Image 1 (cartoon, one colour):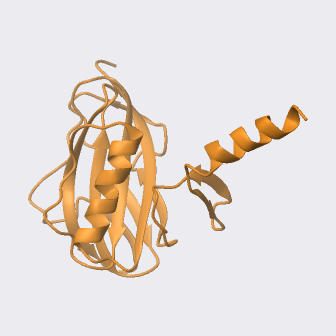
Image 2 (cartoon, helix red, strand yellow; image 1 turned 90 degrees about the vertical axis):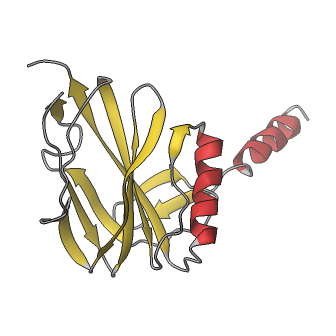
Length: 170
């Protein structure tokens, strides 16, 4: 009889999140509270996932899409600060390096040091004016993401995450 309350508690915890299984990379992760499509098949820094970058270095991101659409890039600093540094760039299906040539800007690594996470957000429609800026808990980030998807009326959407490390000196 003691097993039933434990099982009910476990089921209650599992019902609070969405489990997403992506067949292309056979990983299991906690979803964002919305149905995602398998559009982003690759996202990584130009030196590779988990690579070392130093303050002042330029970083680029390699992204592969299965269909054309709009991509925004959101950074999550080691101190928890979250900000969007690329908003709604249109990409055709295929592999691209961001920032695109001729974009007029570069991504330069800066403080704070530590593990830097970057999320790519894909939509099949132009994103609305909703931006990511601030310090978010996982729940607040997911709520902001749901608003982002809702406001651009995206029928096809995806999110991928990568990371690298920032060091202050070589």
